[in-house]
Length: 459
Image (cartoon, rainbow, N blue to C red; front, top):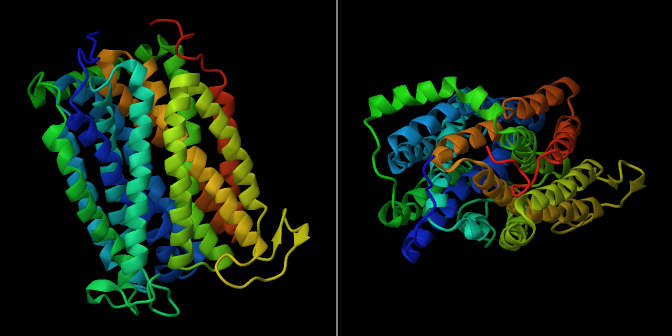
């Protein structure tokens, strides 16, 4: 296999352009998937928060199924064709279209729910596939010794971008349902109608515009691989490579074990973020402002965690960082489930009602555990990306990142669907979210059996 490590460091503007891709995409996850649109959909568009959580889970699962089926083939085709940027451009447009269509999610208009869920699924597919091909560029920019810091810097920049986007939404657009005012105490900007919740709905078009601006340096400054073969031949080659996939993985047991572990714990993390805001809205009655401020605090710890995780990655190795993060997430997930509206520790410690922002003890505990989750989520994801680069053969990098996306998404139609099914069957948001604890525990157990990269046998 050819070595795609750079013979000399990439120009700073190329590094800068590649890093900016993460903050370009992050508002899709921060504003839509987690803190603004998803809780708005569950509390204002769907009939009840329980129904909203179930519907959101089914839509997330459907998008995950498409990603699971297509990621390896697309990665193999990209490896054969050589170039990555055309794929990023096409899937970026797909994400922007899906995000923009969320504007039509009018409160109480259940007839729009199929359109909204389809748009969300389309946008999710687009942003995930675009990320696959951007990740595949990373090994050509820096040496292997600096991959951890580059990956950590990307995640930190992504968190910071999400933080800025969230702050702008809260300050100028998202409103409290009871007052119709933003966090600054003003009506939403651009003449948006607070009664129609247009400020919350604007999170979709805002995300699309944000991506369109921040992704430009990546296209201008980041070098792309040269074209290797025409697209028709690349598709044929990709299909041939797919037929060899299982035997190929069986010869690389460390890579295969890591992909299976990543399949489990990444899905749990994505689902935890996807349902965290919805769960808080149903448990505490939080609106966009409370959830948004919670998101800002979580993003701050996520940014710091991603930067620290990059250095720990280079110092201790990505496997150690991932295992430590998973243990923290397992503890925090159990802690979140122990919190109720008026009690903590699974109801054994009743609490008095509070006033003001996060006034009650359960709300404070929820926020504290959320900050802990944010602090380790960045290192977990950045170290996973680095571990994949260290385990994957250089000449199959895009294909392996396709498998990486597959392993992170192949159960994403299962975990959110399990959350949705349990929520619908029990009528309890807490019971639905509880299934994620098992995913974190299983992911940690599987990763413990993966040899560190310097211990893995050479393929």
